[in-house]
Length: 256
Image (cartoon, rainbow, N blue to C red):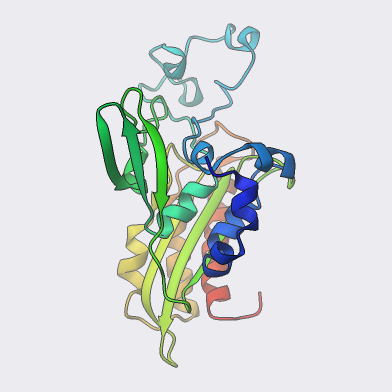
């Protein structure tokens, strides 16, 4: 129940975790953040052009899976719902390795936030009946760890993301060797998706231009948007590549 605006003003958290600051300050408007909560943003339902419309508009098409039908209108009749998860905080918290607590009359359970999202656009959250999210725990990270969040949206003020990227990177030594890295792609699929190949590519290696380009390509390949949100799938996919390259260069302190 922590208000987004309260999180935005918590200097102790934001100083240690810039990635949270970058994510929370980009959610909606000040008025929305004054009312919205951390738990609410993490538990957002998925969105789709073919679902988030008026009843009249939707009546002109077959009932989609998210409406109780059997086809996905976004892909012309597919048998899986591809509605997009558009929360801002989830990619940032997943990059930090956050865990959550869920509570119901049956008891309490803890799981990684990354396991909270099913990847099913119809039922995107791994919530049991009458279960609620009560706590988010974020592990401490080294002070020299670079962490940030990028968001692409049509209107800069209040829109949901249509492509986003959260990055955590720890460098060591004068050679700027990668000690730890996480990259999480958001708003281009039914759940935030960690690009696990990034860690395999970068860990233990010196971060230079050629490997930055290779890492950006991996992020590009991991993003698989479809035409069910604003902007074209090709451009949203391209923005993930741009964000990945920009994040790694910023971590090295290079001029963009």
